[in-house]
Image 1 (cartoon, rainbow, N blue to C red):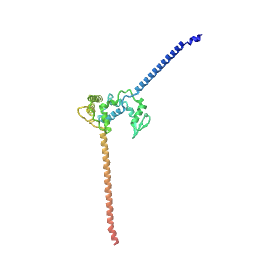
Image 2 (cartoon, rainbow, N blue to C red):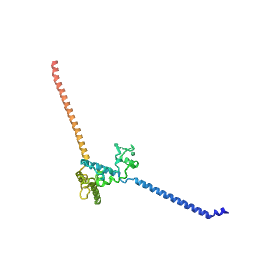
Image 3 (cartoon, rainbow, N blue to C red):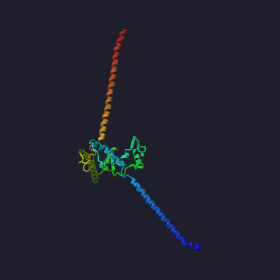
Image 4 (cartoon, rainbow, N blue to C red):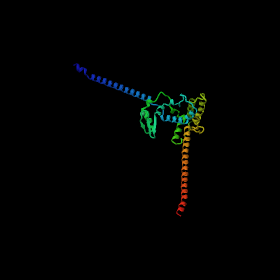
Length: 279
Ligand SMILES: [Zn+2]
């Protein structure tokens, strides 16, 4: 009698409801945990993402190396660390120093000695395998100086394509000019020293003056110190090689002609003597 009363239809309904509520509560809890875990994973990944273009940073590094460093070295000037272009403010500097181009189409990672066919693959390898080695505490990104230092123009030079004449946007030009002048004043504070004053003027002429819509001004008007020196060395070497080749050719021809002349004279002097003996 007791058993029959306990397992009444109402009890079944009650148990069913408890089970449904329990399972839905469990599922909701599991779903919340999954969402929370997913969010935590996203946050961890976001923390590891470097919001700084590696290729544009490389372009800035090359522009500085070619169009600024030779002139800074000529003045024996040291960039202050507050300057955005100072090597210590380059988040990718250490990785860049740990890649070697062994020969064409052979790039090596110094960390793990793996070899890649091109620099792009090695860049991806650095992103995937060695991003933990980047000092993310640095808030400086060289690529941020791209607008000020004419990265697009510089890249168009290496691809031998003339830069398309785009409509001049005064707001963009003004922003780039402003950031260019900020660079000039932080890297070369005019009141710091006479050398800093000269480099401040130089920097503005070399990089900032061309940020204008009013007239077409030459970008990097002071030229590339490194290439100019290299060109002179190549030209001098080539000239020396050609001059030496011509000199030795002339010496060879003169000696050959002299020897032939001597032989001819010797034969000529021998012939009459033999005829006389025969007679
Ligand atoms: Zn590696």
